[in-house]
Image (cartoon, rainbow, N blue to C red; front, side, top):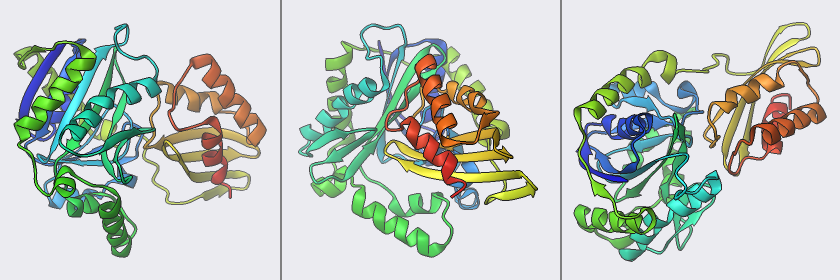
Length: 350
């Protein structure tokens, strides 16, 4: 596997790199920080529901959708991101999503511990300190024939800007988000009182990853990779991709007698699940699912939605269909059980 120690790259390029390498089938570890800030949403999220687009436009903060799950993140040069890319057939890397998150979180945990911060992995995708504060979040999923796992070492964090990037109903709620974030999310600077040198952190991080991945061969970005990143940037910032599956109506709407559009939301252990149901009589005619959860393989979320179309809008029928789909398609949704999806679907009618 290769090591791409890239220092700081312009905003979106710091995230485009692992997408490009995965599509090219290049296995490796990327260490990178964004030179300029950006906001990123998870693959299954709804941009207009999650991001304050007006603020991002005013603050000149670009927004991009990534191809792995997880929630909204604000990225800047005070975070060192690690991105592991490998071919799905590689026998040296874990297979199941739970194993991937558990095993590939250990290098970051060891790095924090090396600098005096007691850190451990908390399922489904967080690294926490000894007193339970979050000090890193992670995401992962399939891209082409490869898998990608991404996370970050948080040296420092701009809580104020993050609270403005997130879409909230009013300023009072935003103040609550800011306060709660500061109480529950910490950084190396807050834990240690000062920051270790960036290169020392990177050195330890690479060494701990090499214990798991084997010796890494240093590499640079070539023209082919850069061209692929530019190609992906055009697609990943395009309106169809960035704003895919964005229902416009803010609440349940009765279309005509017997036809309703219902909106549901449910907080599972593995993330928030949002649903949009079109129900005619007692039949689920259409369904859209979004949220900040993990879903592997990611393309199968669309197939799950399709499998539930024209199903009796009864909990027993829906549970049976989802159970059958999980069994047949072997999908993995860490921290999200089939009952959670059912709760979101039927929560729309409560």
